[in-house]
Image 1 (cartoon, rainbow, N blue to C red):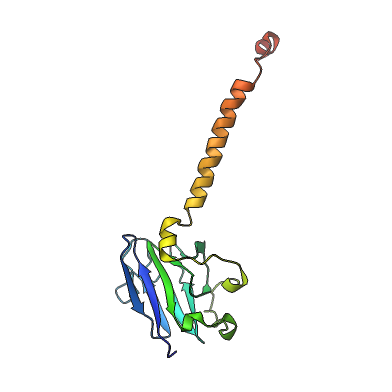
Image 2 (image 1 turned 180 degrees about the vertical axis):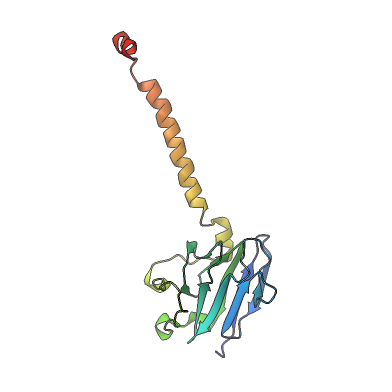
Length: 179
């Protein structure tokens, strides 16, 4: 663990800072004793933990109320992160920078799970994923595509309903009387 690793942090206001990650563990939360203090109401007191193991960096949600996301996907348990991965905690975006984070995943087996922890997710390297930057996350947060799809579906229903009323043939007098 001699290679320097930094956690790049950006808040909702766009303020950025880099935090050195020199130890093996870094607790993230809004509790005053957190290794990485994130003062936000959407961040739990003990929200997540960052861990360095065998040259790899892992993030683990600690049962937070609002969850932890990696590349827009909620995680349960631990997940390996590296360059290009974006960790979202509350209104904060975190990214890993440093030589340790760039080592191949094969060289870094998963740390043992905590007692009672859910099973680990599949490796991030095993799936194709876009490389996200901090600014890209601000431009397209994970919830926006869902909101767009809902808006499009509602518009299609509204247009279809209106078109159905216009295109529907008027009912014959006998049918109207039967209603």
